[in-house]
Image (cartoon, rainbow, N blue to C red; front, side):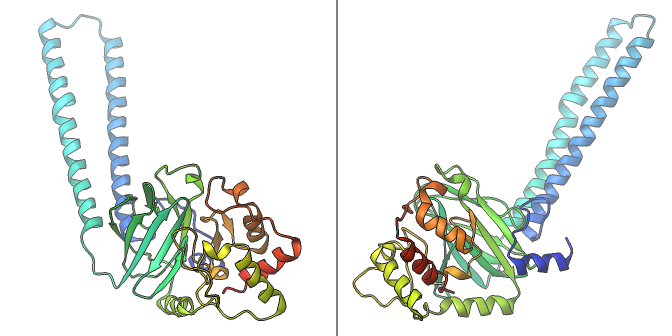
Amino acid sequence: MSLVSACASAATGTPENPSALNTHGPGAAQISGLWWFMLSMGVLIFAAVVVLLVMALLRKRRSTVSTPAERDSDVGRSWVIWGGIIIPLGVLAILFVFTLRTLAAITDPVDTPLSIQVVGRQWWWEVNYQQQGIATANELHIPVGVPVQLSLESGDVVHSFWVPQLHGKMDLIPGRTNTLTIQADDPVVYRGECVEFCGLQHAHMGFVVVAESQADFDQWVVGQQQSAAAPTGDDIQRGQQVFLSAGCSFCHTVRGLDDSSVDVSKVDLGPDLTHLESRLMLAGATLTNNTGNLAGWVVGAQHIKPGSLMPNIDLPAGDLQALLAYLESLH
């Protein structure tokens, strides 16, 4: 893909087609190289078998006299030794060496200036930039060309983190922290998925990785470090009150929300919404972040992702519009 189209993808927020063969990072490139080598070996072996089979069939048709039994026995023994033992062992040894080299290349420790904690939950991704003091959900921002260490944890069951264009898969196991180093070579929005069956909505547990320039990443961090702006305007102020009275604040954090009577730190139940409007996707990257999808998610989450912790919220039309105005003010 050209640099121009890559930049266009990052600008529009459209995730790349998540093909493991369309690589944009050193880890994925190593894995893709191993795959192509294994495919090439397989094609060569298949072609050799087909040629030998055709030769055997032609030889049998052209033979007019029977071959002595001893000669047949010697030929058969040679084929068993070479075709059944020596050649397969040689092929497996070559593949084994290439596999070890690839594993070493993608698992060797790398100095990483940026670390991100990713916690898999049913069925969304909690993303914490602990060094920067910010949290988001279902969306990782990383600078282009910089190795980033991910600390992968699970808050419930086994999940598996995979961004095909950047690296291989890594499981998230309860009670254990696994690490994975990813690096993006191009400013593109990459699609990621959970690839370990983790329950009813496993197929709707996606995320995106936004790779951007260092300057854009630094600007994004500064913006995310800010608390939510105080609501201005009657609709937004009313929407904040609906957010509190409807119980949203018991599951979601909005940093800067001026209400001391509720606990607004329940990140383990629902995503941090402080800068909801800045995100590209909703509901574990199931929906594009726009007004219609946001409204549908608020009132009908159980229709979109049955079994998730987000309940359907029945609101009068006026309250719903006010709540949407407030949520969309959370830039």
